[in-house]
Length: 201
Image 1 (tube, rainbow, N blue to C red):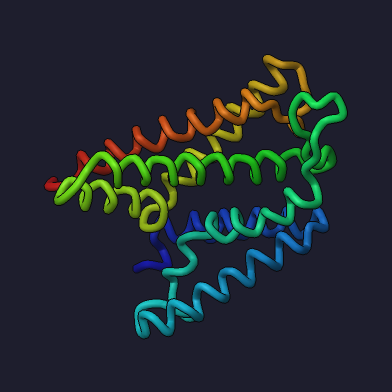
Image 2: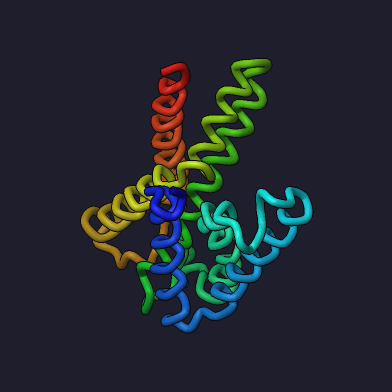
């Protein structure tokens, strides 16, 4: 039963926790943008795939990271500034967890888009179909993998900033962001290999 599916439950929990934190922080533009995106994707999907997608179907709920990442443009507009010394960026210091969340979302997405581009460029035919199927599973069909990788990335960023650089977790350096994209890409490729190895079992 899909309502008891681990991926579905993890997606609901992920969305509920972070939407609550975003709302409590007063970042209402980010909050409502994410809700409107979910409604828009659900309505559009219902027109394109009637009976398979829509407001009353579970499928649109499997990709809360998609809505929250696009909606986070309002976080970066209102809560993301260049540091006064020009060495890096400063997120909202009152809500460091949301800063880590927004940044990790963008880094994960950039890595994912980069991997998709490389797959399109390097592979063709049946191999490309299998790899893109695994990528779809990573992003939308089994999102628990995505959530785990994102939380690992957030933890690594926190430890790096606070434990190594001795800086607040709401500050981000250029090299840290580039390393974050690379780390996200390596983790996603590792999961991709795991998903591909399951084919035919």
